[in-house]
Length: 583
Ligand SMILES: Nc1ncnc2c1ncn2[C@@H]1O[C@H](COP(=O)(O)OP(=O)(O)OP(=O)(O)O)[C@@H](O)[C@H]1O
Image 1 (cartoon, rainbow, N blue to C red):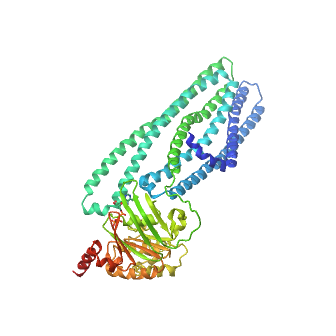
Image 2: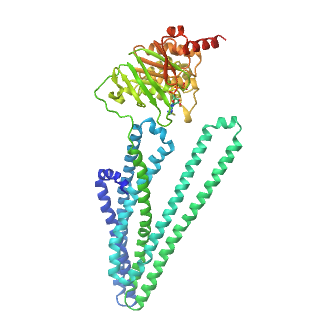
Image 3: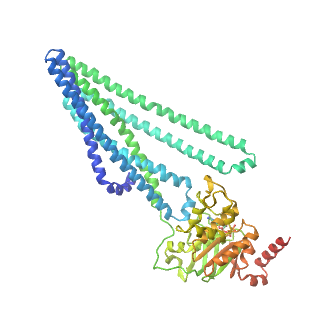
């Protein structure tokens, strides 16, 4: 329960609305309470008229008055109930909105390690399903809770004052009803959680099948996939049926217990009436009370389960909210990045895999220099770029930017000075124009076009019917690997940052296009520090410096010409790639 304290700040934020909501809830219930006693009075008037105790005209006058009061109270109660929902349910929607924003903001601050440790489905669930459970507490639970308390506090004493014995018998079945509903709600919740989990497994499974449909078709795996899906579907059907079974008990049980209460009122009330202890109208009044109480009593059980579920969900939410990013942003002073990069005895081990990706790595890249990083697959090239962007912190050793420890530089200003093109170019399901603009929000159409020309993708884009407005991804067309890489390059170029990080971003383009792009990059990256990771010597040979990595260690360093005169990995790779090209 202490987990729910997290919401107190939101209750404080909306306290005025909440306060009026509570007052209005109480007022709405009080108007509702007026009605049964006037129903009693009306029946008593009829009884008195039948017994000829009052004149017909008096009876008519009194009945009209009581009916008007009943209708008036019902209308007012209805009006205040509407206001109550408007206030309290709206507050829960505001809190839901605030909480979702808080979680999303926090997610964005967390490091890549966090995303690797937690599955996307789990992140999504906490921000949607769990927040929804919490909303049920912040809105409906509070609203029904106050309603129930008001009714209990007013109605039960009133019933005991009017007819103590009848009140005791009438109220007798209600606690059982409450406990029963609580138990059933618990079972329903347990089984519906299982159904939910199953549904998310099913959607993950189908999503993967749809994404990989070309592989499934190419390998003729449809029968196998159908079989797997059928197994999942049968399992799901059984779980849903078991949920439906408990659900089926809910309303019949409620009706049964209300029926028992009503029968008790009529039986005990009837006996008391015959004994001349009460008037017949009181029986009708009590039947109305019972029906007014049944829902709140049933709700006590339901509310308990809502609060428990909300506490469990808030605990899961807090678990993420309490996590801090391992990458701490503690700038010591303002610094405008110029672009000198120095690695001093850097060691880096990935936490999740324990892979020691970089070992005692030291090198310096001067401001404005272009450096190529070459090495076998898995030698640590991409890791170097990730460390420059401070996506991770070094395990030991130090990285300096412009002779300043990287940790002293404000993270946002560091990342704003970097234009990165990752290995697996990721483009959003949006227009090509917006994907490029991602690098510079206020870029003009002309700028976007010029940059796309530099990235040698303009011609391709103009070939699409909607040109730069062509939508990519699930909602639109799929670009080829090479086109994706070039749009991704355009996105980095338009930013005009101090440091460029190109991670094997020309691997999917032919050598001619590669050369054209490299020439354009040379112009674009003039006076800007550029790191190019590549497997191809052609991408590296014009660099000011080439670093050759092997298993996380720097094994060679120099210009193309220098390295070509020395025996070693680079010379071998160059001869190999040259002979491949010639053949
Ligand atoms: N996100 C990660 N989490 C855990 N281990 C990783 C991660 N990324 C890379 N590694 C491991 O670190 C080592 C270095 O990987 P890195 O991606 O830096 O190599 P690379 O030289 O860029 O390889 P490639 O040329 O294939 O892209 C590899 O053994 C890899 O398995």
